[in-house]
Amino acid sequence: MQQVHQEEEEEVVEQQEPKPLTKAKRNKLQAIDLISLVHSVQLDDDEDEIYDSCPVVAEKITRFLKMDGVNKKIFLEHAIDQKDGYVQLKAFVDGSNQAECANKTYGKAYIFFERLRLLEGREKSEERLRNEALYPYGISTNKPDAQIVSHNLLHKGADRCEGSDEMDEEDSDSDSETDLRCYDHFA
Picture 1 (spheres, rainbow, N blue to C red):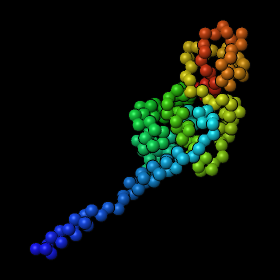
Picture 2: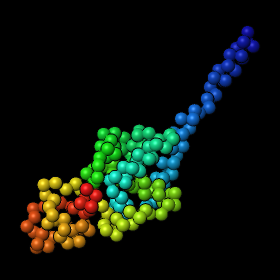
Picture 3: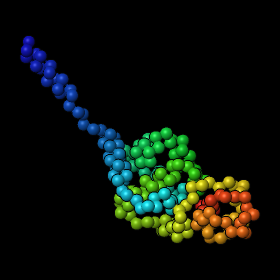
Picture 4: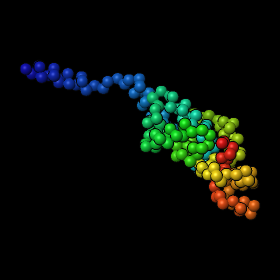
């Protein structure tokens, strides 16, 4: 009787041994580990400045989502800490040109991919360097009202495109305080 009880205990112990991870589960855990490593990378003080356009960031998201173990849920929860952002993510990735610049996904994803670039030791792209030169204060995340944007505003003074809040007297006839940095460039 005691021997039967001992065999049952051994059987219970055998059942408690962890099963080997499936390839999908292993890939998921590796993706989460990579994302954690990316978040450990420190950025400079200007981390809120964005130098990639919405289409560039959307393309980076699309490529990242194709990696083994990465899905939208993992990307939202772990990469950009936006647990309830499925609708915003879809709108951003499906958007065309710079129209989604006010979407929360834009800034958070840009920062994530900038950290990933630094972690991988990759150089800045030519487009990124060009954007830094054209927009030293970063690309705007303010979506201008299409009714307000006019030829007159888009072509007046470089200080407007560089993010200055100051308006000269020639600009004072406009009712717009809209930040127009580079919107026309990516539209």
